[in-house]
Length: 198
Image (cartoon, rainbow, N blue to C red; front, side, top):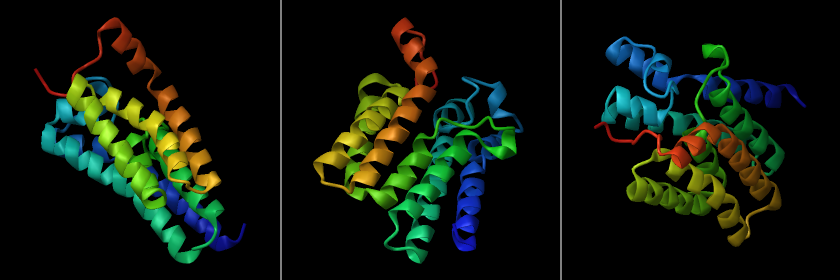
């Protein structure tokens, strides 16, 4: 691994680790978002606790954290899938296990969306539609996230995407599903929080 790739890798992890939701909640309401609602510093919890615009802002920033590293990697290494995958994966891992919050971050959905928007634009767009459909039909952002995580690898396969990228989509999808195990349990028990505040 040359020094430029190493620097890109570190940049990707640190950018991915910027805790957007935590910072927005702290700035707007002066609270630690991890001590409210579901305790997760991601879009859904910020939306419920801080407000809708704060939730959308968190989603936009978290998505950018995934998109930017991959696009920078593509600029410097346009033909090296391994570098794209490395930078994208580290951005996602940086979000989930952020060094800035003692390795307690979000579930990686929005940051993954940014990564795959750069790598698999059309499959990601369709996965986003699954995400919206899940929310509209159930009122649970977790359902939308789960549907998108499951759907993206199959959509990537259907569009004939390169095997390494489809494999990455499947691997990250599994990681997101694992991070959503508590949500799945609450859904089955009827105790999952709705996206909209009552």
